[in-house]
Length: 137
Image 1 (cartoon, one colour):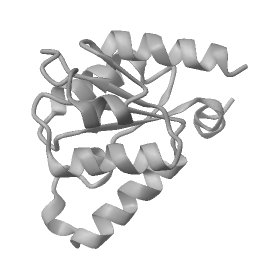
Image 2: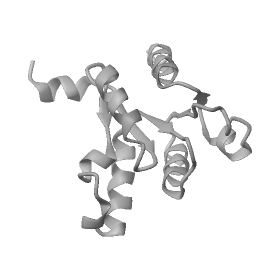
Image 3: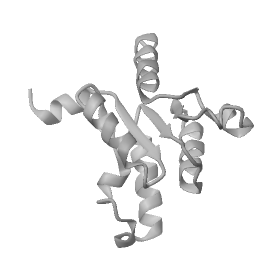
């Protein structure tokens, strides 16, 4: 089986969060990259948004979200881009799984409304995705 055909049948997970949240993305890739097609918009844009027009980045990220089955959002400190991605995924009917290690934002009304579920660890978020995948069958 080719890498492309394997990736084509894997569930796609968009990795949302602040552009500087590189450790979370790296951890997710190392632990879950063989089980899921992880879409890292920072990696796609070569980690440097200065080389792309703003409208290109936003529209490209929206297209990537459209292609995903799930969104995992890592929030230490909310940013406008991350919050907009949550809203966009919610409107598109994508499950939005939030990871907030401190649990500081679990009581935020807007976040609770738009998140499918919230966890304190990345592992719990991916365990939940497994649950969602099984439930959908």
